[in-house]
Image 1: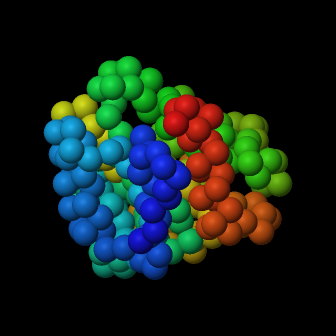
Image 2 (image 1 turned 135 degrees about the horizontal axis):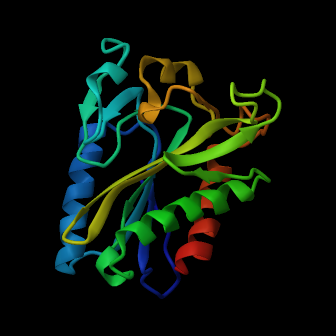
Length: 227
């Protein structure tokens, strides 16, 4: 676990990057403890960059019928908002423990900032991310695929967003598909959406590494959140 440090200055946000694959329950325990400490004023805000082993998580709005292969990977009930999602190797998960109470106390605005953060990070690779009404997450247009039944350019999901607040401190966060096994998404209906696909940066033909994405996330965070 490596921490980014500023010379002589305590960072406003503590950035942590964990190597290897991090157990999901351990990650949740860390987030809850850190969020409580942030709310108490005893710890700095934190962005934690990790990868998980293959697993599915069920958000507070998850529907049982959207878990189409329940025996494939471990399934974890999650207190974040949203439905089913997949986490696994090759996907950068950024857990976001920020004091939303001191950042405008606007939950919708905070989610918009998270979306803008992902879009800014993707732009580092000349990928244009889109927000779609009624569809959570960040999407990319796929003009290389057949048109949708509506005659429009197909969208694929490249990033998921799901958070929870406790005492105005956020936890859970975002995930960006860098180079996961996209077939692993077939055991669920990702975020309850059936008519669109899932993609990744490598699937889009970009030779991007996890380290490249981490740099882009740092830059995008500074653009959006100013830290």
